[in-house]
Structure formats: C-alpha cells, structure tokens
Image 1 (cartoon, helix red, strand yellow):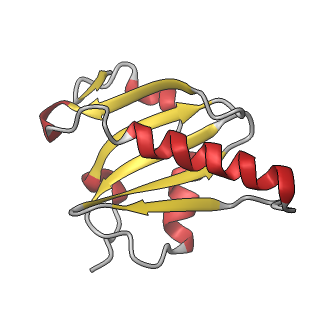
Image 2: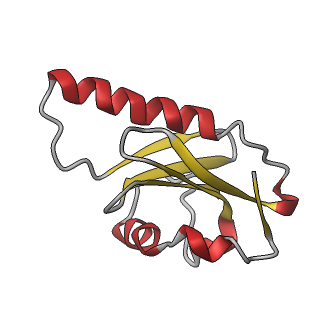
Length: 119
C-alpha cells in the first residue's frame, strides 16, 4: 500500500550525490536501525543512469525508485545534485505530491535536526 502524506512521518534517511553520482552527505533517522547500506543501491542506480546516457538519449531524468521490503528510496535530480530519500513503506506508483515534497527538501535542514545523524 503506498505511503500517504505527511511524508516526513515516514522519512528514514536522506542522501545527496553530486552530478557524477558520487555520495556527498547522508543522514539517517537515529532510531531507524538503518545504517548506510541503502546508499549503495542508489549510487549504483545513478551510475547506471550515467552509463545509459552515454549510449541512449535520457534527457529530463525525473526520478528513480528502488523498492525494498518495508521501505523505498526515491531519487530525484535537483539543480546541482541528486537527492535520495529513504521512506518507510511501499512507494507504489509515485504521486506528483511526493515528487514535489522531495524536490523541496534541503539537506541542510537535517544538519541540526536531533532526530537525524550524519553517517
């Protein structure tokens, strides 16, 4: 069953990657039990996108979804980087409001948030 707003209540982690796909910073919810293992598949998806772009026309990359058991990751391209959010639950068919919510996230808001730790 897809998750519903407010999405913040299901947020387990946030990660940023530069435009070449290299991880920049990531944060996880302190009591989530999630380490950084979820970052590796995202790194691979961004790398796959880069490889495909070398041989195919993949303009206007909007988002990618990785669905795990009990959680999902949404990867979007922002102006200067990629942002990935890890959410508890099934992302299902990604709704426009989820994409808009993720686009508005600023990773800097997690720096001082006591619920999140830098990993």
